[in-house]
Image (cartoon, rainbow, N blue to C red; front, side, top):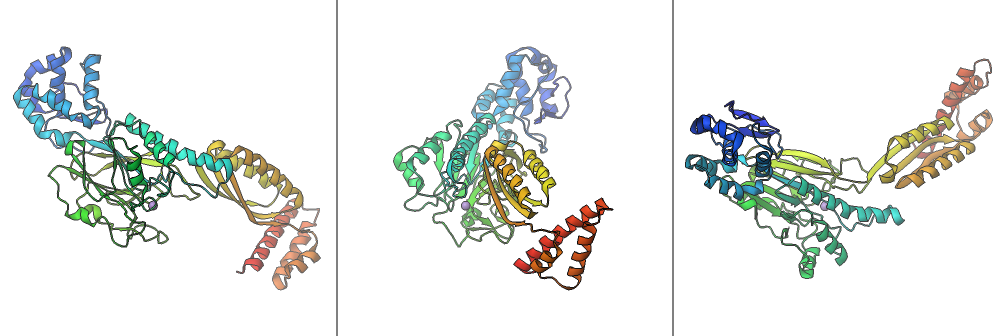
Length: 497
Ligand SMILES: [Mn+2]
């Protein structure tokens, strides 16, 4: 809340940072305070208070509106509009020229510092992906959904009034996606009319015959959509933002395509954002493929304010100022935090970026391992599946272990049939679920497992306790112990230690 009558220095107004400059207050004197309450020019005066260059701007969470006391509703609206978007600089400049000279001059000097810039960072849409592991209608629904999630991203960009959307590669599953997919993709971007920058990745590399060339040939690319298939800087936001793209021009590169970022010069104050697709060296699990290397020091050596990456499907701050956005719509059973886009705010050259994760994914892919020992476990399994919630948008890969008798196995199958109908997709791996033999028959057990020595002694003791009607609790425990012993011994003898 900025109270113009107070004359304080710094305010955090609805988390839009406002600097109230004492010099300006002096300049306008008490008239400024009075003026703010009533007339339209006084709103301009209030706006100029925000635009002082005299004080450092500490980092603060960003919102795109400020609340002022002493304004009419209309004036408040004007202020909010003015602050709403960094794209509105021209408007602010016009406003400045209508102001008394000293104030207008101050504004002209400090606008770069004060107007923060925001963009969405996303990647790995892989539109047109087939989902061979999910057959039939559920797989088709997953394919359609990816395009819907892109529409959600476009809506989000509009709502948050960002300055740009950067897509860090693998927009398409491959260069052979249908013309229909290409057209529908362009259509899905329609809600956001600001600049989109689309980068080729390894899936849709900028080859001679590429989806990118085809898009151009089909003449379906809107004017606000840039295909960054050449390693050339792209100036956005009236020149305040320079995007440095490193498009893959074949699927696998041995060298680091972001090298050229280091040598590209830009004017002082221009924000520098790299856009690339590949593997950041030394930072990802060893299993990550080492194609398309990107230096983990690139943000420093190229003086980037932010490096927007794609290829790793989970959201990850992988190095200083360097993020993987992850795929916005999850596409596999892996727990690496997909489903987000990143809302990035840059305040000024050199200041740390503010990065907000915004979930946009629809489907949830869940892996579950469950040990079934007896019929009581079925109710627990039922509860675990129910606790996942939102069954219609959930895919489950269920791995079952344990031993079951035939009757319980049948109950289990009925339970799973029910869940198969409710979930979007249920994949069951029951290769480690063993059928139980007559555990009461010690002779059978010993013969089947082929045990001797202390294992055989333990078996005999447990069977003895299990048969002791005088101690029903101990008997139940012994029964369970027998099952575990049976299961473990069988597993070890089949798989080796
Ligand atoms: Mn990729």
